[in-house]
Length: 627
Image 1 (spheres, rainbow, N blue to C red):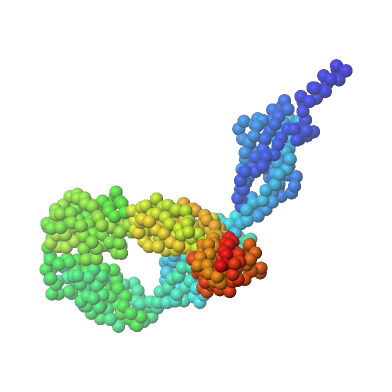
Image 2 (image 1 turned 120 degrees about the horizontal axis):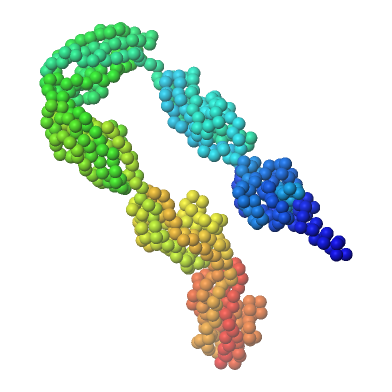
C-alpha cells in the first residue's frame, strides 16, 4: 500500500498536459474587439514540474482551434499566471473561437474554447486630390485611402465623367496597381474646354467607396506656342532693343506679333500695355522701343495672335538708365504667431547703387504675391540691413502671405514669400446647463450660462434637446438658437410629448467649433384629470336659493370640457347621483353660481367638480341648510 501511494503521488507530479487540460490552462474572456483586432486573455495555472516551451492563444473560425491554426505567442518569460495577447488582421463580422494553451515536453494543454465576433466592416473611405497638370486632353488626379473599412482593397483608381456630376466606376475610370494607400493617375483623351467631375474610388469585397467629387476644366483650343521674349539689349535712357520668337502657330496663322510693354503693369498685355507690332507669322523678330521714360522700370513680353487668341512669352524687365534695383532682399520667417498678430522682418543687402528710401513688409490674405499695390504695408524705415516688426490686427484662423520689400530710385525689390496661419480661438468654455423647471406635459423651461467665448466670437448659442439620444448635439437633435453672446440664456421648450424623458444641454459655437454644457434630463408630466378642485362653504343661503363657489388648481394638461357643482341630500353627491348645475367657461381658478329650487328646512350637500378629456375631479362635500 505504501508503494502504491508513493507511485500515485509521483505520477501527479509528472502531470501530463494532454491528460489534464482544464487543470493546467484557463481561457479568460476577451477584453476588446474591433473589426480587425481582438485583445485575448489566458492563464497558465501550472507548469506541472516541467519548463514551458510555448504559451499563447490559438484561434480559428471553427469551434476547437489548436496550435496548428492561427495563434499568437507570449514572448519573454514563459511562466504561470495570467497573460494578454493581441490577435490582428482578423476578418470583419466574423465569429472566432479561441483558447489559451501551454506546451512543455510532455505535450500541449488547452483551456476551454471561448468565442467573439469582430465588428462589421464597411466600404473604403477616401480623399480625392485636386486635379493638376491640366492640358487640353489630359489631367493628373489622385486619391488617398484613409480607411479600408476592414477589407482588402481589390481595385482602386479615379472615375470621371463630363456628364454626371457624381461619377461612379460605371463611368470612365483609370485603375492603378499599387499597394500604396496614396495614388495618382493620368486621365487622357479628354475633351478640350470641358468641365469634368472626378473622384477617387476603392473597391473591396463589400462594395466600392468614393472620395469627394472634384471638378476641373480642360484647356480650350490653344493659341500659338513656343513664344519666347528675347533679352532686352542696348538699353539707354529712352530706348531699348527688343524681340522674340514664335515657334508654332498650332495650325492657325499668326496674324499679329510683336512686343507689349508697360512701366506700371508687371504682366503687360495687348490690352493693358503699349504695343510694338513687328509683322506676322512664325519665326524670330526684333524691334526698337523708343520714347521711354528715364530711370524707369519696364516690363516687356512677346506676343502672337491667331484665331484662338493671343499668347505671350515670359515677362522680361529692364530699367532705363539709373541705379540698379535693391538686391539681396530677404524675408524673415514669421514667428510668435497668435490669433491676431505675428512677428516678421527682413534684410536688405544692397541698395543697388542708389538710396533705400523705404523698406518693410507687405502682406495679404488673398494675394499669394503681396505687393505695395495689392497688400498691406508695414514700414521698417529706410536704409539697408536687418529690420523686424509686428503685424497686428490680423484675422484669426487665416492664411497670410508676407514678403519684405525695399525701394530706391529704380523701384522696389521684394524678398521671398512666406506663408503663415493665425491661430484659431479655443472653444467656448464654462458652459452650464441648469435643471429644467416649470415642466408640463408639453413644455419645460431650461436655462444656462455661457462663461467665455474662448477668445473668438460666439456666432450662435442656445439649447439642444432630444428624447431619442442621451447625447444631443446641433446635428442630431432639436436646437433652440438664443443669440450670439456670452452670459445667461434661457428658453421654454415647447411641442414636447407628455410623459417623455428628454435630454438637454446648452451649446455655443465660435470659429473653433461648438462646445456643450453639462447634460440634464427631465420628464414631461402626463395628462391627468383636473387637480386641486376645492368646494367652498355655501354662502348667501335663503329659503330657496344658495350661492355655490369653488376653485380649480390645474386643468391636468387638458382643456376643461365642463365645470360646476353637484348637490344632493346625500353626503357625497356625484354627477350620476346628484343634481348638477354647470358654470360656463373652461378656465381654472375661482368660479361660483347662484342656484334656486331648494326645499325649505332641508340639509343639502354640494361638491364642486371639473371635467376634461381624462376624467372628472370632485371637491370635498360641503353641507348647508335652507330656511
